[in-house]
Amino acid sequence: MITERKSSAWRLRRLAAGALAALCFMAANAAAAGQTATSPADKVVVHGRIYTVNEKQAWAEALAIRGERIVAVGSDKEIDAYRGSSTQVIDAAGRLVLPGFEDCHIHFMDGSIGLDQVDLNDAKTVREIQKRVKEYAASHPKEPWITGMGWTYPTFGAAALPDKKILDEVVPDRPVYLVAFDGHSSWANSKALAMAGITRETPDPANGKIVHDANGEPTGALKEAAGDLVASKMPKPTRAERLAALRKGIHEANKFGLTRVHSAGQDFEYLDLYDELRRSGELTLRFYVAYFLDPPELRTQDLEKIEKARQTYHDEWIAGGVVKTMLDGVVEAHTAAMLTPYSDDPSQIGKMFWEPDKYNAAIVELDKRGLQIFTHAIGEKAVRTALDAYENAARTNHTHDARPRIEHIETVAADDIPRFGKLGVIASVQPLHLYPDEDTLDIWARNAGPERAQRAWSFHSIAANGGRLAFGSDWPVVTMNPWKGLQTGVTRKTSEGKPEGGFVPSEAVSLEDGIKAYTLGAAFAGRREQQEGSLAAGKLADLIIVDQDLFKIPASKIDKTQVVLTMVGGKVVYESSKPRASEGK
Image (cartoon, rainbow, N blue to C red):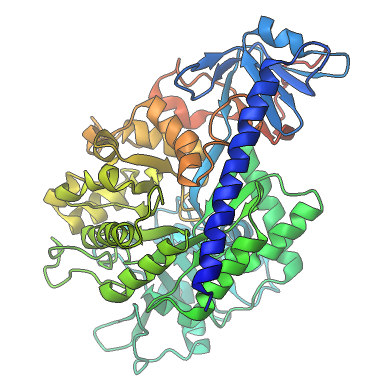
């Protein structure tokens, strides 16, 4: 096990690094203040409506960049002093300029691999699912497995779960394995079940359930960890295939205006691939990557892997030093841990994936080492357990500003809402998860019940009580397009404006707070607010230019936003095919 001496040494190095970063930040600001035309910038962005996300200077017209950092923000006239004969001029032509957006909860490798699999998002009927699976199988005759993601529970009526027979009808000769949109249930055809050896006698794995019909036969529906029985039999992508997928995923992220993502699992194992892309100059997206800690306890080998990653990856492009764990499942499958039984089925109350004492012990140890912690908690009991553990760790270790996070928080007890602000726990939430379609209104709300539903996704209440919000997507659960998430967080309605008045409209956030949750709030959630998250002298030049002014359009049109330009570290990494403002001296 890593010794206490090493842990203390790491704390000293962290303090020294923090002091150095602060000095660099102050030096950059001082240097920026003293720049003249004799010291030109590499780039300037002019004629923009720049929303800086800084309280002291919320709006500006122009900014100057040298190397990877911003050196000045101000009016066109003020920034004109930074223009030289070799300065590249980007004319924003009155468009809205924002800090680069950060996605605070993503599974990037899974999402990237999924770009070339069956896409079941927006497939509303069984027939549409069959059509997409059949067409994919026909166009990929050499694929040994047919895999994909995106089916939703309402598609299958009152049962809310699919049956293997639906897939057998269209692909009987190859294994088919499809993951639900939320990643917590999966669906296999008969061939896939046979290859996994799943029969009526197969016992449920820990934290998983094999669904059976009235005759005791597996239906093909698999809850939580039961899906791993099938997934473990699938062929693994090669290194070259993973690299190709990552390149595509990174391009998509930049296209949507993302400049950093916080990985919440399934990426730690591939840190060397991200590093390879960095060394080759192909990494145009910053990564904060969590180690996924499986129950039932924190092990010596876990700590060794976490510490090695923290010491190896700790710069502005790839960083470790963070741990993700899961306390429960999801409301739709009755696996989210509740304080009281589910409304639609009083025999169900959910299940905790960790024993509370072992979870508490793990949190204390991780906190003592200065590691940031993400905890998946959707049910109100899981949320309370995480808050209790974080409070205990801070009291035990006398730590301050540790910034532990709870991910998702779909239901929360009223008494626990103020604890986020009081304890300094960050609410890392995904607004598109509450998108009020049939899944949310018919399945989620039915299962949770009216009392819990009135506090569904309590964004406004958490923030109003001093808590900090950080927004993300959970891609590939939903699209990583932040504009759809931003609109949902602000309106609490579908794209068609339903339901009238919004779903729990009292929990909507303002446009300003929504943007902040994707920028400065996200940077704070990743311990990088001194370097990222707003447009200010000394900070990294991560910014985007968009095609419509969010402050001048109806909130119902936010999801139509297109990114014109994305810049990461002073380098343009994405430009749309639309004509951009001309460049010139």
